[in-house]
Structure formats: C-alpha cells, structure tokens
Image (cartoon, rainbow, N blue to C red; front, side):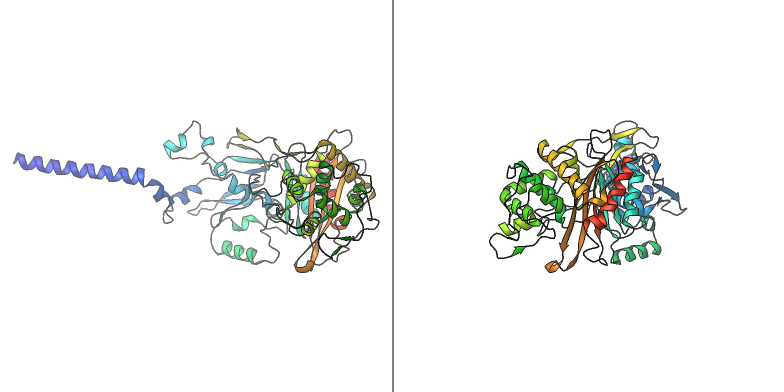
Length: 485
C-alpha cells in the first residue's frame, strides 16, 4: 500500500512541477507576446483607467480628460482644439496618437520610467504612475495671432525665437477639433471619415508636414551662399547679370516680375526680388556650393524632430545648370516646410548661428516636478556672421523700401522677404504667397522672433496673393504679438 502511495505522491509532484514550469513559461517567456495580442483588451482597459497627463501652453492646460463611465474610462478632451491641433495632435481610443500626444505618450500616459519614484519600479511592479505633463514653448498670444491672421485660409505659420530655437507658434489652417476623435463609436468613425475626405485636408499639419516651393523667400539662402563663397564681395556692386537672362544650356528666358533688374546689385535684387540675378548667382556658386549651403540651413535633413518628425525640405543634389538656376530662386524641385523657412529667417537674425528648433520646454510629473528639460543647442552655423549682418541689412531694406512694407512695425527693426511660388503642371496652379521675417524690439541686442507664413488661396488672383499683400500682414501681427511678451 505504501508503495502505491509513494508512486501517487511522485506523480503529483511531477504534475506540480509541470504546472509551475508552464506558469513560468506563460508569465515570463510569453508575457510580451500575450500583452501584444490584439485580442487582449486588458492593457487597453488599463491604459484608459486613469486621466491622461496634460499639455500646457505657458501655465494653462490646453488638454484634459473626462470619465465616460465606460469600460475605457477616461477620454481625452481639448480646449481650443482647432487652435492647438498642430501642436498637440490627437489622442484617440480608436486611432492612436499623433504629434506631441504621440512623441510624449510615455509621460502623458504614466508609463515613462522617469516618472517612477525609484529606478525599475514600474518594471518590477508592472505598474504605472499618474500621467505626467508636457510644457510647450508656445506663446498663446503668438499662436492666436497666427491663427486669426490666416482666417481659415489654407496655409501655415511657424514662429521661432532665434536665440534659442524655441517654437513660439505652429499653426495650420483650416484646422479640426481633435476632441472629435478621442473616444470610440460611430461618431468618432464618422468624424474620421469626414475629416479625411475633406478637400481642404484639415488634418494635414501644413506647418511641419507639408512642403511647398518657397519661391523668392529662398533667395535669402542663395544670397548667403553667394556671399560666403565670395561670388559676391560687395552687395552694392553690380552683378553683371543681364535681363532678360537665358537659362544655361537652353534658349529659355527667365522673366522678372520686378523692374530694374538688369545688372542689378545683390542688395537691389533682394529689395525688389530679381529672379535673374539670384538664378545667375546660384549657378556661379555651383551645385556643390549650393548643396553645402542649403544643408547648413536644414534642407535635406530627414531626421529633424521637434519632437514630432518634420518633413524633409528638399534641394536636389544632382541637377543641370538650368535646373540649378531655377532651384536657386525656390522653384524646380526645391521645397520647404514653413518651419524650415522660419529657420532661414532665424539664422539671419541670430548672426548666422542656427539653433535647433524645439517645441517641448520640459516634462513633469503629475505633481509638477521636472522630469526632463530641453534647452537651446546649436544646429548649424548657417553662414558667416558677416554674411548674416549684410543679409539683415538687406532684409530691413525690403521692409522699409521694397516689397515687404506691409510687415513694418512702428519703432521696431523688421527684416523680411516676400515670395510668390509657382506650382502645378506648367505652373498652372495658383501661386502660393510667402513671407519670412524677423523683428528686433527697441533697446534690444537681438531679434525676439523669426516668422514664416505661407498662404494657399485658390480663389485669389496673382496680384492679390503676392507675399507682400497676403502673407506679410499676418507676419506683422505674429511679430507684434511676440514683441508684447
């Protein structure tokens, strides 16, 4: 009898060991795959069982959370959703996250290890902390000035503090309310379908994810390249460029919208925006020189993040001379985001030292203790300081005596550059209006803000959509708001 009892006990022990081994296999080796299984709703339920941390502009939260009483308890809410959508993005229980909601999801959802009271706490306890907060660099008054200035027209504004790289405004219109996408159910899926089907593309972040031909605003980059390469040694001397100008290797004549461009100086070419002079200077600098120059401003960088990814601004690295001429005046395949062109203005304003742009000032715990703080750091030396000084003078002349007079602010030093960019097959599309600028307040040693504005307006004629007419007044309002502090 005892022998049978021993055998039964041994069998039970084997079964117990097998059960323990299987439990270890499930809990240790297969835990990640089970967590990631789409059929496992436990993690999804846990994700929404507490309020999400907030995104702040200054000391004011522009996001919130509400308890719906549903299985996925807490749903994201937005204050002034359309105004801040290009900054916050959306946090949707159905469609995931974008922009800051995505880039800082770990902090906002409470899963970031830096929120834990001690290292490895979350990993050991398989828990998470209350959602932390994200404090942006945006200034509410500047954001509102840009949004109201665009007035619902298709376009975008980016404003940057030149000395630090802080992004003061990031606006894209027409916009949308991200709160419409926060929850689940037919209202959310209907809103998603409607927004994605809209011809005006309200969910497209035109400030950082859309590129446009920059047109004549790109002439500032070409001028910097020409001065740095000593192709031009005196901005006030005649360049020897004929008008009309025949594109190299072709019989095609490049026209000017402006008068007096024949043999004009660089300074005059910037003031009245001569295509011929700037195209010729780009060819004289040469392809290698132009490619190197644009790289220093941020063109062709596929890794720019603010912390959300920014679309690459393009300048071709292989071209014929006629293509190079057109690229040097912001046409052909040259494209840029509004943020990129704000960086161009910022580099000029900051003596050639281009700071890396950033949108998040710091992240904090739920109680407000700082987790991470972002600071200013160099991106590139975009040009020689002397070149920047010369370009500053030329951009001021554009506002005081040239095509950018609509950006002038009484008592403030303002520099700018207009642009009207052709697009579409055989340039059949309505042109885009551009304006880039910077403003330096009285008794200050450095500019306070650099701005880029682009306006798409399919209903306007060419005269009405000039950079000076459509975009410069918006830039002026944005700069004025930034100067008020």
